[in-house]
Image 1 (cartoon, rainbow, N blue to C red):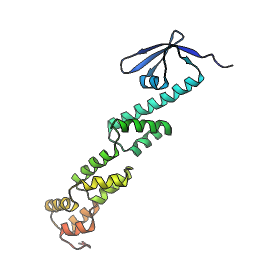
Image 2 (cartoon, helix red, strand yellow):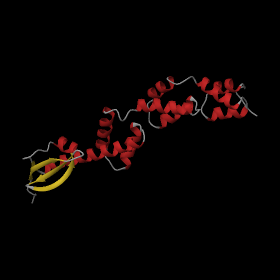
Image 3 (cartoon, rainbow, N blue to C red):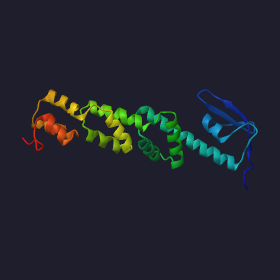
Image 4 (cartoon, rainbow, N blue to C red):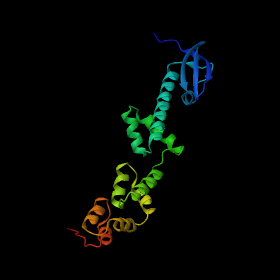
Amino acid sequence: MAEPSKTISGLCELRGGSVAVSLDGAEWRTLPGDAVVRAGLRVGLQLDRSKARELARELRRSRALTYAARALGRRDLTRRELDARLARAGFREPERSSAGETLARAGALDDERLARSRAAQLAARGHGDAAIRWDLEQRGIAVEQVDRALAELEAEGERASRIVDDRGAGPATARLLARRGFSDEVVASAAGLGIGYED
């Protein structure tokens, strides 16, 4: 026999955006305010099985959003990285997608911005374009966003020249530049060697 539905008799907003919900005059649960709003809870509403399922869905969305926001508070993530974290935490695709869209609309999740800042950071650490491209693509950033980020950087040859100025030209410097993802042409030119650059 199905349980009779209960009636929402009170909604009291608490500090921090949560809402204390009462059913049939008795305190029931404290819920996130966003889930209460999206589920359409109001005083006098019957909390039947259908409405309870809708509320449960909105609670999962709210938990996914909270988890995602905390993850982004610790470090900048791409959309793919955030989705993978949410999946590992047990959130299903609809909740993951909703959290990602909400945070993207708020400007907290932005692959383009991350690509530009990460590319600049790696360039400042002495990496060449190939290494920067590989890093960004491994994080799930789209090729066209990677291209735009690389286009904003100082020319690869100029970055390599600074390394040569610091370390001096020679085979060891050429190998370092190659390991850091500079092109063969830039390595040969900056280190003053032929493409082979053997000791």
